[in-house]
Length: 64
Image (tube, rainbow, N blue to C red):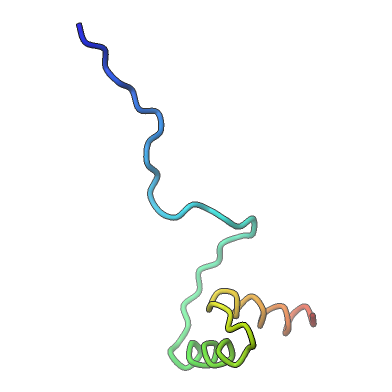
């Protein structure tokens, strides 16, 4: 009798979690996204949209 192969390493759906913070989903209007993208491109390192949002939140709420 042939032995069956058991694969315990099932593929998981989606991206792996890379951060330790809490995921927050937010819907923004086109004008808000344009303002965020414009701010991000004006930064020397041109951060990604999520990083731009994190920086804006820190600047406004945490006064960093």
